[in-house]
Length: 308
Image: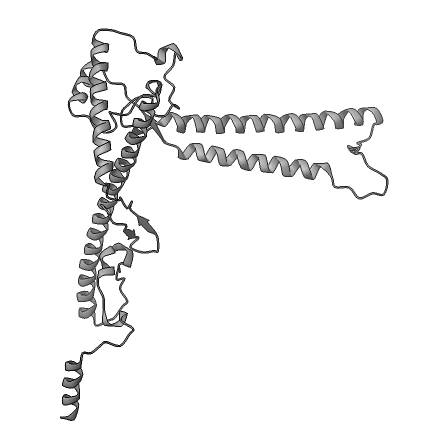
């Protein structure tokens, strides 16, 4: 393995965060990847020449769509930028406000209709009359009221709608792709990374390109794991710093308690076995459950010591 699996446990709790274990690539896999990368770089150089000569590509996105469709995967060969998008939060808030206004108007209309029905009945008879609801069913048969079913349906609908609104409010980020200019494309071609080599969606019109795209996307997965492991390492270092600070403060508290001649239980952070994957190579005597094998010379030596 190129990177071993390990975890970081929360300082006060049992939550574990794991990293990605990255396997070591074989020589054949690395040779094939290098071959695909070199071939793709030559293709990009040819594409740069066509752009400079203003030649049309075999398949152009503009021929199929007027807009830049963001839902198409790998539409632009570049690393996606995960940026905060306040428009999603604003859309969720406006959606919730419109929904509340709609419910309020509906409640007012129902209240108004009930009041008008009661007034009409009172004017006809001169007395206040109750409102009657006629339902279908046989006489004497026990039937479930339709109102209960409607109430349950409305409650389920409101719950689902509230869950959707809550989910929208939590989505404060969006994936964005940035188009490069011609100068940026030239600069990127000098030292490209794996994200720059990915084929665009409209470039995958032949089987060899699709197979090469598979190799490139496989390397993208490795790259994503490496990026995540960098964040994991920073979290691990942050925890070590916090544990060091806690131990420092515990020493100060112990000195103060000793001066006050009092005792108190202090919080001592501990580590988890999964935080140190090399612990499997450490063998203690308690791990050995079988009796140690002794050679003939060792048995004779122990027998002589016993006689003494």
